[in-house]
Length: 455
Ligand code: TYD
Ligand code: MG
Image 1 (tube, rainbow, N blue to C red):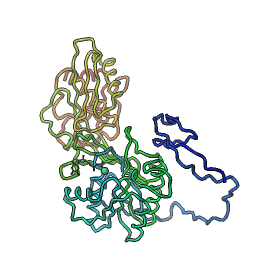
Image 2 (cartoon, rainbow, N blue to C red):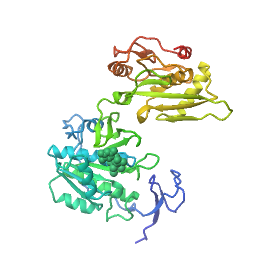
Image 3 (spheres, protein in one colour):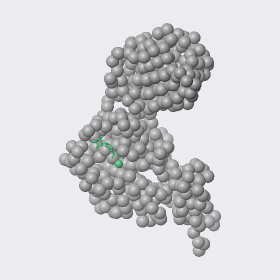
Image 4 (tube, protein in one colour):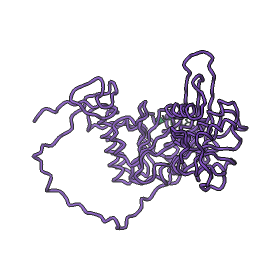
């Protein structure tokens, strides 16, 4: 038999090469190539057309039972999942270290256990005693969770196979798991993939909902091969600024539902608290209108969230290059908006430092934020507050026009609910707040945008 070939696999992207290289030729990461045993490759002589079992085809119009979901009891988690955990499915939960993944899953486990579910929580990162201490601090020591500290997938599956089928199995984290069938240290691509495969196979066979915690790399991807994301049914990301209280749970992939719903939590002294009205949370502490502050009705999936955008402009006396700093928004987009305001509205920012902040540690991705940012910038530049109880939304084009955005009606309705009376936005949205319907208001163009100056 031929000697197994050496191969080197990039631990960041999974790219395979037959020689070691300092830098991965695919993802350009440094020092990520590690030697792994080659996979078995069958020669072309192996003919697969025979000897197999016949598969059955299913007509698309034949009746299929909808997946029954099990509510986790945490409404915000259920919302992000699209209604609850599906038995036999696998969920991958990614997020920065210390963001609260273990806390969220421990609370979920306790909630399901309290509702009578059979829950197994395996930690490969902390000793069982540590997890118990945390559970005690969270006030959930009464929940009958089967808690263990283990890293061997064989041990875990042997144990689970000998007991009643679990409703929920949490593995914290997949990077710490180890299979004796596979070469390599825990956390390598082949170990992560192999362990995940075994656990997912077990979940499917036993109808257990499986949640795998996944570490993320510094650029925010789930560590290990991308293939892990393909293997699971749901990929969730738990996000937030560690220095802030707020955490957003987002579905990045969901085979059983939409991916545009979010769950909002606040990290408190006794664990994660659900936030059912995020707008009031992100706007809290905002009393009278201040110069440089604008409220933006953002949309997360179908859920509106009102956030405050703050701008600060500092005029420089010297000829030093002015700084531009952004927290919670895209810096490229800010540069574009500043250029549009200069070129189309005749406002000059070239000698000023510009700082932009989205309050509460919220991260905006909605392109409709352009107009609110422009309003905050103009307000900061002129040192005049925007009209009280007003919201701003719309995408700004390079020509200085305000382009329509999705779901103006939902944004307006949420603004009205929180006591806002005036909205400025694209044609469909520039109606008075309150009707919740797209109005017939006229769109703004750059001339009127310069009119923002005469607030
Ligand atoms: P953890 O769930 O361990 O994060 P992860 O598993 O994502 O790494 O959360 C750790 C952080 O959460 C820790 O820095 C402290 C904070 N925390 C609280 O503020 N309150 C609490 O009740 C708990 C349990 C944790
Ligand atoms: Mg953890």
